[in-house]
Image (cartoon, rainbow, N blue to C red; front, side, top):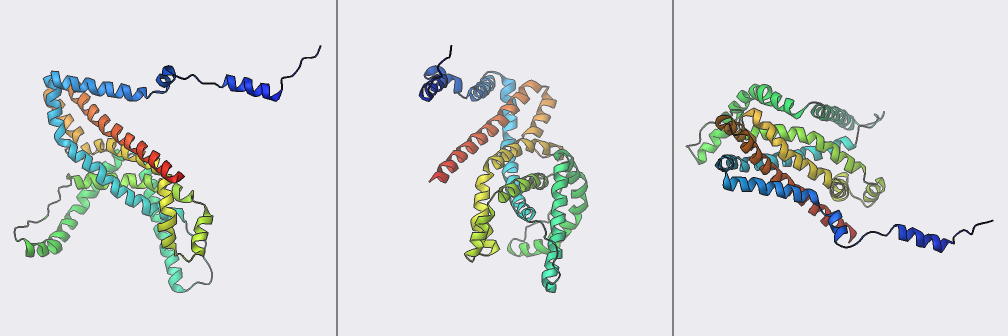
Length: 313
């Protein structure tokens, strides 16, 4: 006895029925962002504790003074890291070519300089990516800064300060103590510059070579091609990881507490140690970090959706 095989249209109906999704309130509840609900619940719990418990309120009143400095550290370090990462990423995207036999001396010197600079940049990137950020901050704060602090102070006080005193005679000499935010910003920007360099390199190399060749055929120079064709597309391609690294930068500002910088983690350590309110202090500290990072994450998602709509136009 033979069985009849279902026709193609019958198979399509069976397939569509099997793929039907549940609709209505249950479906919306299934796909709701419950993680955000949980985060908001934790945030409201800490706010409630601050309103009803003096220990939480005192901890927040102490920590809030360091919020502007923490935001400044994150923003300034990230902007510098973007500049470092973009410049080094462009260089890493174009490795040195094999030497040519017949080149003018000036061209040959440029090739040699490019090879040297390319390898210096590569050493910097691999070094920064290969050691923990905390270790580099220790190196920067306790080895590099003490070694260069004296010559930099002397150079500034002997050249720039006399010129500024023409405008304002009350300007005093510069004293770089090594524990100011400048040291923390320099360290964080150098660390993240290496990671952003690889992100930019991936974005640049993802651009089809045909677009670069088309730009050159239109008479564009290498600088114009990079500025008008390659970099805008590369930035749009790598925006999600760039946003994630900014959120990571906000969290990693806590590492500069080892340099004595009075950001929110350093203030929390001092306050909890003096008052023995570790639970209350670190709960408030976690709430502040979560507020900044979740806000940053939502902004990144909004920018991604905007760029996707802009790209479809």
